[in-house]
Figure 1 (tube, rainbow, N blue to C red):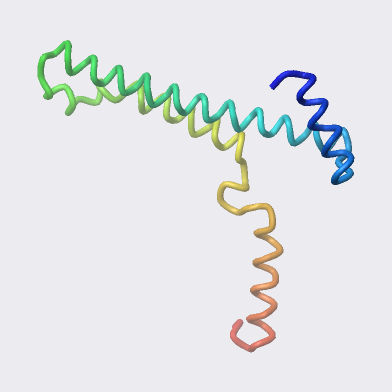
Figure 2 (cartoon, rainbow, N blue to C red):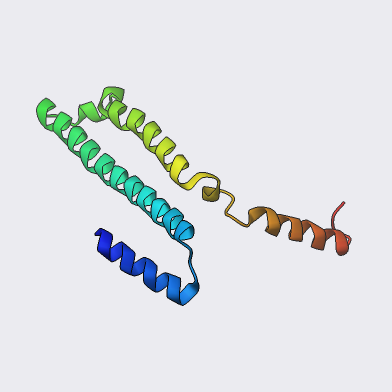
Length: 117
């Protein structure tokens, strides 16, 4: 997105919802990080598909599919991709932003109904 387009978007959000410059910047930064992760994931899929297909083609056999060496790049790069995903999505991947509040309400309801022992 071009800078002028970002400025127009910020101006319209500021007028409509009262979004501050800092809030907009944080949201913009988060969207860029998510976009970077999805790009990383797409490159991961295509490159590893090519590497596995190429190894089968060069060996002229499907027996290489049973070797760890065939999948080693995908495995170790997958660890890096998982770390990238955790850095982008963080706790929200498992717990969500309001997880604590929902759990507290749930336990209070259980206690009030006498089901929490």
